[in-house]
Length: 232
Image (tube, rainbow, N blue to C red; front, side, top):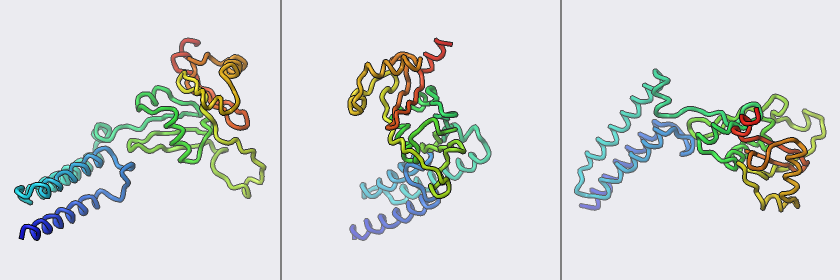
């Protein structure tokens, strides 16, 4: 009898949780807005309590899940009516790359490292920041990339132009720190790095936010914002 009761409770809660999550839409965890992720975690916890404690009435879990679902629906309606409410609960998008230049303040505000930025860009099929008009960090944690018109994907058949493959750009300076392992892997040293900075009239290593070099020898450089203000 106890086993049958447990199976019935588990089945009812399972169906209820599935129905509630179904109304959220088909999203991966990484695509969820903050409010949706919190709702999912709380619903899972509320459903687990009656199953872990047989003395807890099933109605407690059902009422709690129903209340959370209604609250989410009410918030969703409020988001449609109020942009201010949306920003409080869901956050605001941030421009990480604007016209080929990294926005250092936006990256620090969203606690995104240069390595993480390049990782997200590689997942979108881009490795060269100078090709991007905008890279926008959305409120759900995904990165939207808008390249310049000349750098939008095109097949070799359409372009009829022989393209030189630049390979993977290597980050040699990240936020004022030299990536020594990557530098040595390219057969280069810190003196070469200083010479390159001096020859191009860039700032010192500690004033550099990003310095990359691809297999074709092309350099991408961004100074720290404080250094730019100091030199202006």
